Image (tube, rainbow, N blue to C red):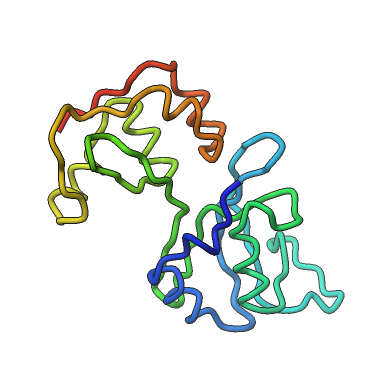
Length: 169
């Protein structure tokens, strides 16, 4: 499993720094046992015995929330995305996918599923914005990379047939 603390970008740190106590954050979680996704609310304050049916989980600090981003967080779920509307920030867990000689792209689960379905616009956007420099060779994701990558969500493994994935740019 990947320790997400090693992969937290400055973008997410900027969003986390703007989280206030008392805030409720809309989060996408992934259940570890089934791989199913669910949208829930996580509150940034101590429960103090007050029950709110709209709140799935309570955190007493930003560090408590940050811990939920890690695969090994002691819970039955992991936070894979969140929208902090108050701070104007959105974050989704991304996966590094090699798709060409010396080229790696970071894609969210939804973007990766789109690529598996033939929609490569998320990769093209990153190329157009200068986030990816292409090396030589054909553009494809070797099927074995996807099969062997146990960090990828179950939905990606379920959608992938084991073949190489052509990247049409």
